[in-house]
Length: 187
Length: 187
DNA sequence: TAGTCATACGAACGATCGTCTGTATAGTAT
DNA sequence: ATACTATACAGACGATCGTTCGTATGACTA
Image (cartoon, rainbow over all chains, first blue to last red; front, side):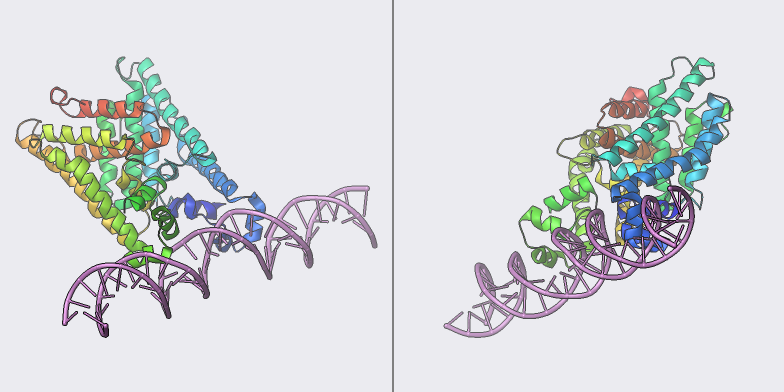
């Protein structure tokens, strides 16, 4: 499964071929196919694997921080560290997949939509908690700010993978500092 | 050529197959192939077509506005209108292609890098003009702000195509208003 | 020991991929 | 009228695609 994820992360979900996966796992095509029943099932399984991995590496650790600004800061720190980590090839898996399946309806699009929606919700909820806790002004446009933060983080993943330039990580981090109350954001 | 661009814009540069293109143009595979000599040449030609089209629809009109804030405002207005236009299927072509070729070196990556770099430069140069003209504070972090604006615009293209939700266009527009001096940005 | 079941295999299927060869047609220049 | 060039064609090539079929192996159960 890890092999399938690596192929999909680097070359895209479409490049995840049963033949390639068979070679990568030293199995026969028929053997790989029998495990899942269809190519689409493999792709969906890869998405689930990506969700588990992302939860374990980024979300769950951040949920140990107290709600509100501290948690969202911790979450973004981990996200930026994760997409630039050498053993996370291809950057943010969901961002790449989202772009690839933006105009293609179907089960894969639907599953990705769930994941990405929950990512937005997570961010918005934490911002809301920050507002209720008085960490941010009451008139904070939570939905818009959550959108802005997620958009910037996702774009940074693509930009960093494409240009291999760590400057974009600093730009992203600096911008987040400017958008969130700076005194509580460590970058 | 327009047919090739439409296929690539909706389903991605990889889905642009000589066979599909032959069917779309009612030509033979060999006839299509003879025009370009290789599949990669077709893909590169599609990128050039996209550059021309984008220049004609977005960049050139914006360049008629006076330099600085007015021009960058006009440019972003046109960009957002363009990616949400019904006869621009697939959203921003370069953003989709960038995500697809983020981890794949080669001529296509190089060509895309040129285009995207010039997009960043265009934005940064206009911000610099705004600063020199006194429209923005002298200590404006031009490079970072340019990065933020382009990242937000690109992410909005993907997000809008994926969720088909016009709310993201408003979020993007509102955020841009907040980032650029509001009194001179009409959204 | 015999039977059942999941697992993985080799081999092949029709389809499509990018590419190449050879040919027919149409237009232009001599 | 003849020669040349550009264009498009049909057809085939080896490779790979997703999928299916039949089979062999091993572990567990009766």
